[in-house]
Image (spheres, rainbow, N blue to C red):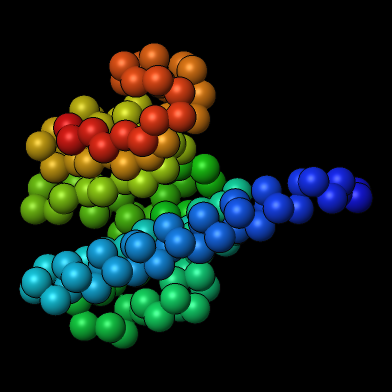
Length: 151
């Protein structure tokens, strides 16, 4: 497939945006570790749309060998699937000492289906852009708005 030349700048901007997000994540992870917090990061096991993978984290300088950081992959599907996730990943949700920060609309769509079942109220924060009308309407924002929702 050949791209139109006017599409290339959009793709470049999108790639820069995704890279910036990952490096912001790395900054936040390191700041939490500096404050003595244990951070569990759950990238994808393999590429899924534009989600960060284990390899992306390594390239950004984050690994499980870093003190205070643990990497537990979330699988290879959009959002989170309790049926397909490894037990170690599900244990993170089940441990009521953990604050879960779920980034991305796919995670909102998936986790909101089981947040009550895992008793995540009071320890779950969603961060995402409402990219479609149904999700925007569901949470009471306009399409395209950034969302930070504490449950």
